[in-house]
Amino acid sequence: MFLLIDIGNTKTKWMLRDHKDVYQQNSFLTEDIDQDHFMFSDKIQKILISNVASFEKEAILKIKLKKFACPIEFVKPQKKWKYLLNDYQDISSLGTDRWLSALSVSNSIEKSTVIVSVGTAVTIDYVSFDKKEHQYTFEGGVILPGLYLTKNALSQNTAQLKNDEGALQIPAINTANAIQSGFILSVLGNLKSFFELALSKSKDVNIVLSGGDAEYIYQHLSADLKKHSLIQKDLVLGGLFVLANI
Image 1 (spheres, one colour):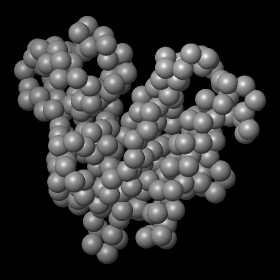
Image 2 (cartoon, one colour):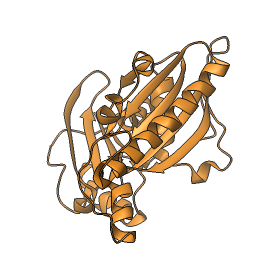
Image 3 (cartoon, rainbow, N blue to C red):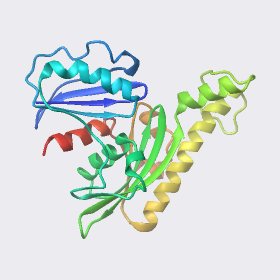
């Protein structure tokens, strides 16, 4: 039995599973990581964790997990893992979540892939695939503020802009819609640029959307992009399972 944990900036997701089946899966606010969220009595073989939050959160969780008396691994990106190469200039500065998402995709999709993770931050990454060599390469990507960060930054730093709900409207004729539309168009524009980059190198390209706002971005994709797209909300947990399953 494996306990897989993804500590994000806002939410922490976890999954209890074995080689075949998922037995429990849930999430909680990362700010509540000091509470008792893991109350099951199953025998845990090992615990694998991805952490993009603070070291303090990592230390707190480590104490909470001691009761399981099993190996605990906080995963870090690697330069090479079997069929996945990592072209990031300084792998120590690469978010573990981005690398694990690439690992999850490379374990299940035999195509070049644009990975779009839409959460507190938005990351758009390109993973190329050499079919002949069966070799994937994490090529890097871009990082944008997510919807909440975008709204919060504008409302806090611009006196006349409020953190209100908006909708996609082009051109927008109210401030809430202008902010919402700016965010959506920024994500879609970057996504399209990476998709076109991938298409210039490969004839067959997938787009995988992940994260809490994945479905929201998916509904705004053009019909052409939608036919290449799928949603896989728990890519990071999927990457942790790849590592746990060896």
